[in-house]
Amino acid sequence: MPELPEVETVRRGLALKMNGRRIIRAELRRPDLRRPFPAALAARLDGARIGEIGRRGKYILIELDTDGLLLLHLGMSGRVTASNGDLPDAPHDHVVLTLDDGTVIRFNDARRFGLLDYVERSDAAQHPLLSGLGPEPLEPEFDGDYLAGAFAGKMTPIKSALLDQRIVAGLGNIYVCEALFRAGISPRRGAASISRARVERLVAGIKSVLSEAIEAGGSSLRNYVQADGELGYFQHRWAVYGHEGDPCPGCDCGGGVRRIVQSGRSTFFCAKRQR
View 1: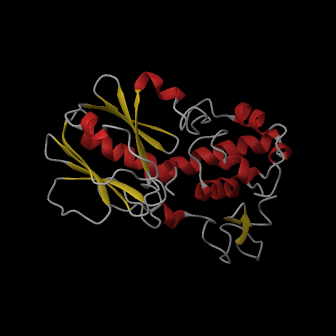
View 2 (view 1 turned 90 degrees about the vertical axis):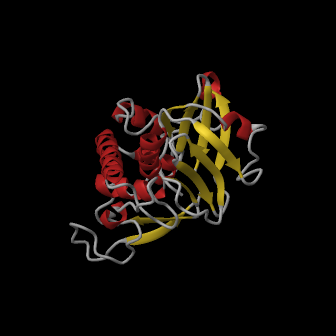
């Protein structure tokens, strides 16, 4: 599933193509994705003027007219691309928006785990998908004080705690593995057992890996592409994720990167460097 860097990369690409434009035709080619589309969604989209394109966690938020908001989630296999209209339709192009300058926005989702929802902007903070999200990890309020407080009393493994969107929004399996490696923290440690100094290192590791991944256009894995159809390339800079058995970067452990399964997900780490 695309994580924060991939969603932010898509958001930036869409903002370049969509901000200030008007939708002249909205095609919903099926009644649902993960969940049914809101009633009369096509009518709400037709003719709507697009404002700012934002992001909250792994959700893209598209302002429509003066008070509407289109909430978009890519799911496991979704991709949103913007083209000049000369590309043929592809299988699984479930939502197609034509803008007033000829740009065509396509939401392609082979597995249909993505979603679209419409909400009044004044009600967005109370939307069930947004109301429980923790802070954005690249914002100033996500710091050592906050994370130490969020970990207090939590004996769940720290990796599981970081994947909890109520603690921090937007993190996923790839970037949690990479951030824990940078911070030298074992993914099996209980969250509450992490010292304050190590929490500070973890915050720095999260911020650095996310920032570098965004600059690289995210990590292209399975179906993810940027809004212009180009691949991201941060996957070439992964230190541990997907590297089971490979030498640990900058480490003399001799055992290489290990893989364990936590809550049904693969975790990659160095047993010597990460304690």
